[in-house]
Image (cartoon, rainbow, N blue to C red; front, side, top):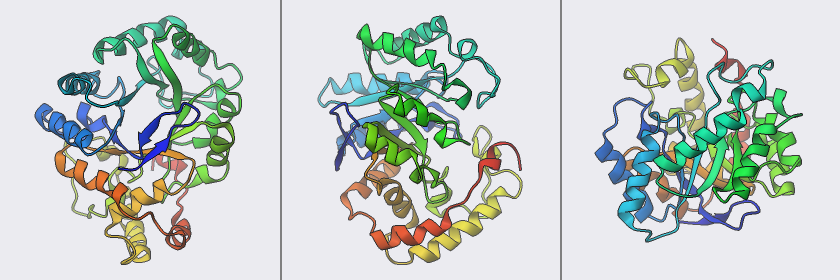
Length: 326
């Protein structure tokens, strides 16, 4: 496993991290036993960064992580990042939403204490707001509350996760010194962060956590027109209507571009996300030992060539409409 610097914090984190959404549910049936074994295997292979959220199984993901770390008895330094969802309302937040209605100081305090209990810790490594809107950039009082948590010693670092449709909405927060990290979508289809966000991260020493590197499984190349997602798997909505076939067609074009230059499409997808120097870690969704071994093994391979990265830029796909309907 290779390690990278995490912004200005001085942490050395695994460049391929453990995405713990599926551990909590949301991707179909998932046994607790499989989750525990997968986490142990990932940590054995050198992974030391886990990303979770309160919303992942209503705390189930956090509880499983806490159990695994307790079983390991502190045999390695593992950084755990979790996320606080906004109070009930539209997702992503509306331009008309009041930040103090969705992330009030009292609400954030309650949610902080909840994660401390679920993770069985006195201090959270990285506490993130689970989504954002540009409407709050002029008055980011929720982040001032998280700063207070840092001063109290209950949080080491604070961050924000971008809304799915607007990666650049957090640029002002980075430039204003409000966040230690930003979690964003960056993959072969979603390349917008290259324009401003990634250069700004380098300039302001903000750590970058990449999510959705495989476009919710599409960039593994394993989806077919016959693929049916189980009840409880959010991809039933994500690939609804003709989205699945349109995605498959574009993935096949990517397959032709990659050719024999990478072992497989999944490796190419992870390596593309790892290519920018601004990226601290790419969190890959892992739900079993096979996925842990396959995803983390990419770190031991040679990086993607500059030539292939340039060729893959042609597959940039502007899909902000994806999140508003067909």
